[in-house]
Picture 1 (spheres, rainbow, N blue to C red):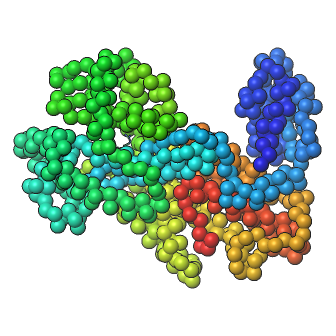
Picture 2 (cartoon, rainbow, N blue to C red):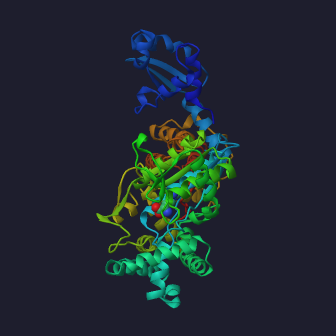
Picture 3 (cartoon, rainbow, N blue to C red):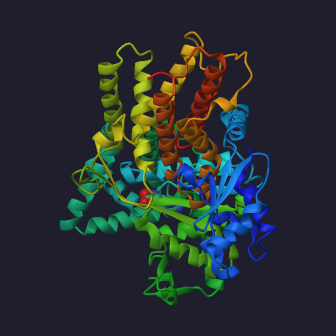
Length: 572
Ligand code: ARG
């Protein structure tokens, strides 16, 4: 697709030599109001530098913009307003979208570069909670966005599968558990044992020592301890896999914390030789007070490793193994300090690539005012949340469209989609309140709304095809963009055009909500067009031109939904 802003910036830059072309590009705006053109330059932003009034700048620049796809250029109130030729614009957009099809919006800007995305990463033997859901959903969307832009992406599940909690679990299992119960109860049962351990340890502190001893045995490679630990992992992974299957999320590799067990020794040595380790009552830590951070504990008194130790080791391992361009860690903002400490330690070790380690934090989720903590009480299990969403959509379909084919599968796609979309609908750093009514509303800014709009576009295409298939029917008339002049049509075309840019912004800002909000805008623009402009009219040229728009919208909605991890059923 032709990049209009870029071209305008290029033409302007030959005239405004004091400003770099990419800075001019950054100044260009899409005016909210069509009377102000399609692209505009707020000249007051240049007036200090050029020592001229905004209006004088606008007047002078007016002549520099030219091209046969430019309709006219106005200099008004200090703005340079550029109007594109509507027919040519329509022609360009429709042809580009149809030609690219399910690759529309894709680019090759990341070619030859690798991005590692560390996401989801639940903890073994603990419930997969909404924080992990958000990490999974945001990480998965980033994964798809980077891949769409041509990067090699490695999706890593950094499972929490190591640590003293496994010593506790072994003690609890041996005292109060049995094989049968763990097999049937799975994570629920493991959680019960873990909670029981803490209750009992309050009156019997000796249990803590026992647990520590078991963990030391684990770290020493003790067979009995490791067999139990592996079994806890199997049981947990089976449950996590159900959720990943429901969400349609995959990983390239499951390298959990334990993967680094045999790799931490040399890192500790390196920290020591580089003079970064300080002893503190038998334990070893890296001091970070110079950087206004609390110290990071690297080795406990008993010689066992910690969360920090494993993350610093993982960063070094990933650098040598993947030669990454960057690593993106997707977690709740409660881990901000943890990552700042780890990244600083890597920097202090002398690795300038520490700047390529990026924490992508996100806000908390609560369920209609109720917090969803994993500590005692109120645990809303994610599995249940997804299943409830599916059931609710199922009953809506039952009421509104009982003859829909493939009802169960569609309910799954829309129910799960509603939950995913809800997680991506606001800036990730914001805390979000999950409300059933908002998330499932077919008329709100939701996944179901976008999916429904996509299905509506499919239905128009099907009708045009005499009931079968959603391909653009053979149109035996030339494409007549000159017929696409209405305001609502222009708006759809503009939105279609913006797709590529929005994906790139989402990548740069590591913010998938840019894509989800874009999809709502496109869906709204399409629904206005659908309302204002009858599509299956008799006049063949008009019908063909409008149908092409419908097809472009269908393609773009589907591509966008796929990018953020949603499916797009053709009938709803
Ligand atoms: N398992 C951790 C948790 O549940 C998240 C791990 C994130 N990734 C990492 N490399 N530390 O909080």
